[in-house]
Amino acid sequence: MTKIVTSLLLFLPMAARAQDDPFGVNELNSIELGTKDLPETIAGVVNIVLGFLGILSTIIILLGGFKWMTSQGNTDKVDEAKKLIGAGVVGLVIVLAAYAIARFVLNSLVNETI
Image 1 (cartoon, rainbow, N blue to C red):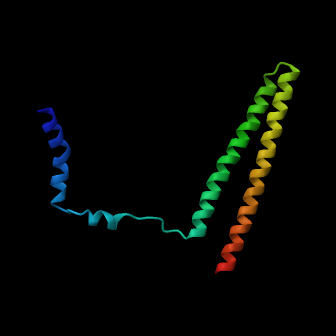
Image 2 (cartoon, rainbow, N blue to C red):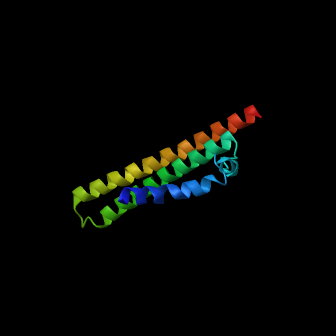
Image 3 (cartoon, rainbow, N blue to C red):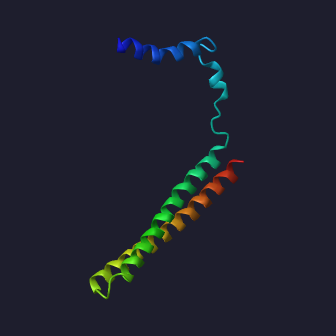
C-alpha cells in the first residue's frame, strides 16, 4: 500500500504538468546559456583561478607570519615560518606573472582575430 501511495505522490505532479507542456519545449526556450564571447569566458575563468591562487598564497604568507610571532624564539619554528613566508612570496610572484602572461596572450589573440 505504501508503494502505491509513494508512486502516486511522485508521479501525480508530473502527470498534472504534462497536460500543459508534454515535451518541455517551453522550458528549453527560457534557458539562457552563456552570452559572452569565447575570449571573455576564458579570461573570466583565468581571472577566477588566479584570484583563488593569489588568495591562497596570501594566506600562506599570513600563516608564516603567525607562526613566526608565536614561535617564542624557537629557532626551528622561526626557520619553518621563514620557509612558509618564502614559499608564499614565490607563489604570489608566480601567480602575478601567470596573470600578466595570460592577459598578454589573450589580448594578442583577440587583437589578431578581430
